[in-house]
Image (cartoon, rainbow, N blue to C red):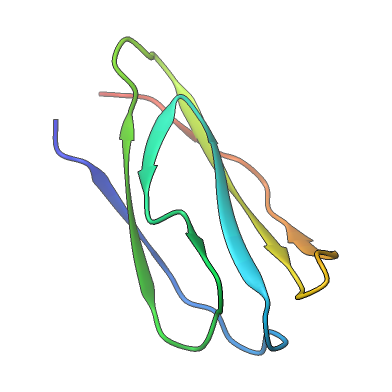
Length: 79
């Protein structure tokens, strides 16, 4: 099965902020970046073998590690 692609766009974040995608039962390629800017990023993810459901959520932290955003999970099931 082909991976699903998620495109993220960030704007107005402080210098040094990081975006991390946190997942359960998903294999993520390119899940975290060291520096965010206004450039769109693409992330591919695929359901782990044998998994019947999964979720992915985002977390943004400033350069000191303080949480700026804790995103709601997006639930995924195969068709």
